[in-house]
Length: 194
Image 1 (cartoon, rainbow, N blue to C red):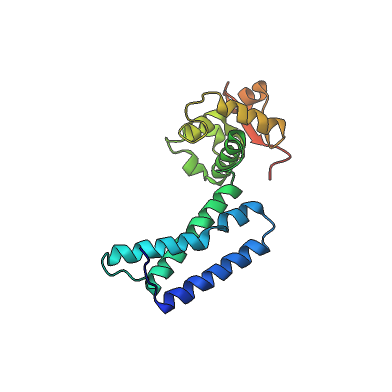
Image 2: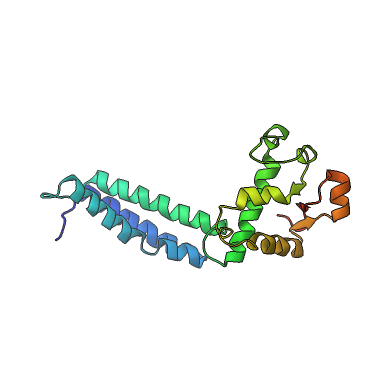
């Protein structure tokens, strides 16, 4: 079944098609090109579905349907690209794990001493200032995050790789006990932290 389109919707969707083509041709990043590759077709399908939903027996794609579909596609592609850039999708489980840890490091550093005192973090008094992060913070904050769920050793492997790459430093056990009164692992930023 073909669904007719208003002239305003056609103009809008044709302009989006040209915009997408220019974006694809102008990008050097293959992920960006692939993300935008079918965006115009996706917008056409969504606009048509919206028109059929609004008037099942006399559907016609309006300017509003086209505008809604284009906005949805733009948001969708932007979200996917943002997730790729943060390492949440694409790549290996290891790279996703390392990206998740780095996000939690940034989160920890941004916490005020008062926020760090919140019971949900379980952070001792000695960790409430500075960039020293107890392992149990990662355990609590990442246990329900992919790729750590169901793999008890994934966090340890990812932390070890970040230490090996000098992104994080693992404090010596004696230093951790002396400074923080803990027998657990303590991490801080390494020379390759970005």
